Each structure stands twice: as structure tokens, then as C-alpha cells.
Image 1 (tube, rainbow over the protein chains, first blue to last red):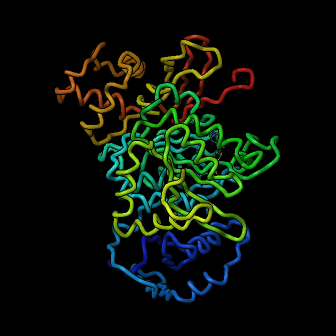
Image 2 (cartoon, rainbow over the protein chains, first blue to last red):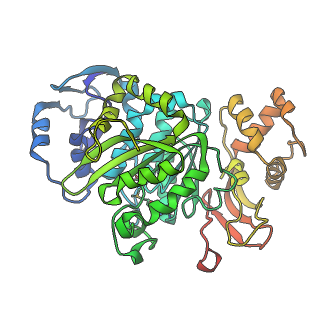
Image 3 (cartoon, each protein chain N blue to C red):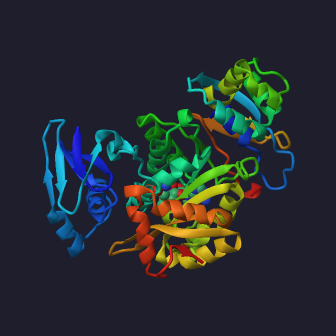
Length: 329
Length: 122
Ligand SMILES: C[S@@+](CC[C@H](N)C(=O)[O-])C[C@H]1O[C@@H](n2cnc3c(N)ncnc32)[C@H](O)[C@@H]1O
């Protein structure tokens, strides 16, 4: 089965129909957002044009389908279809965060950087705050498991979330070691300097302080002043966990003052780059990658030369808070 | 929970200095076959506290690990297979991890250890 597509893709099942949507695009986000039942979303006019420009052909009850995207296209085989977790295989719980724009942005960032990640040959990867398991499952699908020598850890402070993550991983046939804990408490001593990739979609919404660390779903978004309360506790732990060649991918909101986060990390010796930048009517999200300064050159050079998946990596060059260069000082 | 994870966990209660290794009290465990990757095993070996691994393996009935190990053993396929089996193929489903210093029990349910602390432990 071959299909014309833009970037990478995923198939959705809406009722009895197959629906193909291009990954890494607002169109997908908008579609998924409706599919997973997230809160209201308005299609900005420009993206409505995009949707109009796409010619979906939907097959009912048939395994063959095609989508033509008139913007540009390349051909890939169906093998790459499931590099990310599938929405229909996700487990759910009312007290657990369902994948939303931020989760998709993070997975899209990992996809955009996948060629680099594969070359990086991580041994241990970790997600802090795994929620539904969408991100860690996607990472495991993207990078492979034991056969490629990659092992995964996932933590969450919410006991319901770890159960949901376990079910989501199982439904996709991948494995991560899951621990119910605050950030990486209990792990950080022995795992110090051993983790090659950390991914975090933290609770980043500015809220009253007393909401931070509340039980259940509140903990998934409540970030205290400037949404930084949990982020500022996560960063030093991640710094401890990361190996010399370690990378961190983290979602931030403009209200979190990401450039200040980058400066803070700079003081600890990290360079940074925006991998994905997204604006909806509600929020402006960035996925920032951090790595130890001394290997910055090599990393940067590869990112630009890594083929079609680097398309998104070039977004950062147009960063609105700082133009010109890919790195943030 | 794999024994790899057991090897990486220590008691996180404030003031505890001797929180490793956590004693493994397993009620239920399963074996799941995993492809052996020698590079991974050789890479992770220096980071593994061998006595803790051998002890935890024994706690769930696997006594095929030597009491002590050094890097030269990694040349042996037989050793690699045992190391691999203990580290990655044994999963503790139900039980507890017990702090050697305070006796505090961290429950393991459905394969997931719970390291959350009570307010007075943080
Ligand atoms: C925005 S949600 C992201 C969930 C999931 N990773 C995703 O991208 O869809 C943030 C997650 O972090 C968890 N969390 C919040 N504070 C935490 C902490 N101190 N330690 C570990 N996890 C935490 C929440 O329970 C929630 O599952």
C-alpha cells in the first residue's frame, strides 16, 4: 500500500470511516482535537483554506485509501504509518490528561528530530509526567525497543495516569518501566548521568499556587505562578539525570517565559533550540530541545541535513521571540 | 517492574542515607521473553549494583547469578544470558519494596512501584 502524503501520517477511525490526516500540521491538530473530544477549537481561516486544499478520499470498510495533498507530496510505504501511538488504542480515565495540542506538539517534535534520535543511539529514555502514555508510547514506536537496545522509563505523580500509561503501552505492544513518583524521586540518585533522552510535557498553565500538586487531573495543568512551579523543580532533576550526551525535549507556553528558561539552562551548560512552535487561538506552544553545549555544533549540523523530517526543525529559525539563529542564548 | 528498575530505585525519604538497595518482597512475578542485546548489557553493566541484582533475583527464585561479577565475564555468552534474564525478563507484578533503613514499604501494584511520599517524609 502506498500513498501520497505530506510529512508523516496517521490514520484515524471516525465511526466506520478511515480518515487520513497529515501529521505535523495544524490541520491534524484540529481534526484530532475534535476526535479526542478536547475543548472548543476554532479553525483559523488560514487553516480552513488548508483543509479546503486537501482532497480527502475516504473509503468505508476498505483497506485501501488515499489522500492527495495538493501542497506537496512524497511517497512513503505504509510501514511508517505507526511511528506514533494511535488515538483509538489509547486508554482513558476521567482523572487523566487526554492527549491534546501540547502532547501532539511534543510527539511531532520527536518525529521531526527522529533521524537525530536514531543516530544518537540512546540507551535509556525517560518521560516525566506520562499521563495517558501517548508520548512515551510514541517514542518507543519511533525508536524501537530492546532489539535496538533502547529502554524506557515513565513517571507520573497521578496513580491513575500510570495505570492508563501501562494500558496504552500494552495496547501498542511496547514496554516502559513505569514508576508512580514525584518527578523522578527515588530514581534520580541511581539514574544520575545515565539518561540519554528526557521528554516532558509539564503542567505549565499559570494558576494560583494552591492548585499545584493537587490530586488527579488538576496536577496535569496547574503550574502556579507563570506556570513555572513544576517546570522549575523538573529542570534541576533532569540536569542530574541526563548523561553527557543527553537531550531534553520540553513543552513550554509563552507565559512560562521560555527564553528565560533557556538562559537558566544555559547557566547549567545547555544549548537549546525550538523544534516546534505552534499557536492556537488559546495558546502559543514551543517544544524546546536542550543539550550540553559542548556537543552543540555536531547536533546543529545534523539537524539541518536530516532530510524531510527536518522540515519542522526549520521553524525555529523564525522564532518570534528571537529571530536569526537556531540556538537560543 | 523489571529488576533493572529495582536496581535504580532507592528510598527517597528525607534524611535517609542508607536507602539502597530496597528489599524486594515479591508476591507475584512473571517472565517475559525479551530479545537479548549484548551491547546494551555491556553498556549498562558498570552501572549495575551486582549484589542488589543478584539478591533481588534470588528473592524471586532465580539463583543462577554469581555472587560477584566483573567486566571480564561479559565475554561469556552464558553469563550474558543469565544477566539478561535477571535484569530484563523477570517482572515483579505485585509486592513491595522495603527501605533497609526505615522499614518503609513502597507497594508494587500491577507491576508499578509507588514511590510517592507522605507529607511528613518529604
Ligand atoms: C500536561 S500533562 C501531560 C501528559 C502526557 N505526557 C501528554 O503529553 O499527553 C502533565 C502530566 O504531568 C503529571 N505531573 C504533574 N506534576 C508532576 C510531578 N511533580 N511529577 C510527576 N508527574 C507530574 C500530571 O499528572 C500529568 O499527567
